[in-house]
Image 1 (cartoon, rainbow, N blue to C red):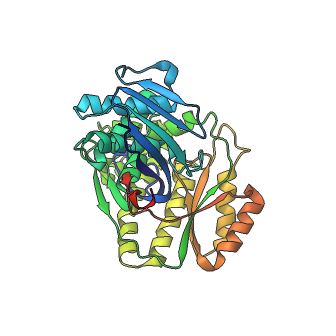
Image 2 (cartoon, rainbow, N blue to C red):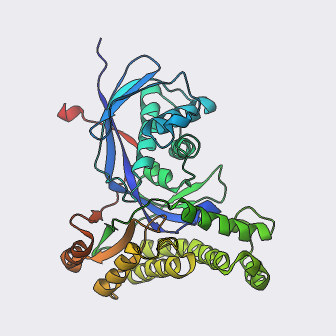
Amino acid sequence: MAQTTRYFSAPGRVEIGGNHTDHQRGRVLAAAIDLSITAAVRPNGSNILRFSSDLLPKQELDLTDLSVRPDEKGTSAAMVRGVAAWFHEKGYPYGGFDAEISSNIPMGTGLSSSAAFEVLIGTIFKGLFGANISAMEIAQAGQFAENVYFGKPCGLMDQAASSFGGLNVFDFKDPQKPTATPIEAKLSGYVMCVVDTGGSHADLTPDYAACTNEMKAVAAHFGKMHLREVSEDAFYASIRELRYLGDRAILRAIHFFDDHQRVEKQADALENGDSKGFLELITASGRSSFALLQNVFSTANPQEQSLTLALTLSERILADKGAWRVHGGGFAGTILAFVPEEVKEEYQHQMEAVFGESCCHFLNIRAEGGREEDRSSSS
């Protein structure tokens, strides 16, 4: 008897507050967005998982082999095998299925298409095989897959935002039990826009790693692993002796302390309908990333400053009417702007004139995270 086709989806995400704070066990304000990856799925009663999409050739994985495979590093197969390995390790049920996958999350734009894919696989395992698993655990399965199997040392923010849906403050103080606090956004009259500047991400791994390593070096001075564990007062009292680590490490630590605290202030402003205060905090976060975190361009290639250019143009266009900040890891890629509805067309026109048609992605928050979709009424 033929299995009924079932449908699953997982959204991309946007980082709104807390830039490079998650890997220091700090807070982040992030939201799921109304761009997603979807799958039409049929269980096949085996340990074979087959999936295809219009972007990837058809792939087949034998889930009886859950070992890390060096030849799969950086591939979607690694993500699938890694999520299955996490389910296996934790004793959750999983199995084979056939899936046709499609996505409208633009790849390479910092909207977390890879995290959405990992959350999608975990959500399918949960739906098909009855795993009693939480949204945070699905996110942790995705992070495990990306860290260990895919080979990217990411934090948990991307997968958590996709898995939970809506707008949340994520607090990573306890990495085993991170928390998610839903936030009701009261921000009318503005649209979120992620601008893809087209900057190359090639050879940026050392830049990303340096942000983490320098913050950890400051924490290590105090005998701690992460800056969240360090007293801010003790840090400021020790700046002179910390200079052996380099001044940039100190500046990046200052950014962490400030942006970590800004997340709660941003959430409070949103819930209280304080649009002006929220936007001021967004721009303050962006200026901190620019001046202190220093992740708007790579010092290895100072001639390429697409993010700096996009932020400068956004400030000129929006002036005191909106907000702008680097989005995600930085050094290349995307910025985030909150654009008043009355200047949306002008903002898009001016940004596209510089960065190309379709560089602006206007986003809404998706309330649901990874989910099974009911298509019975349309089938």
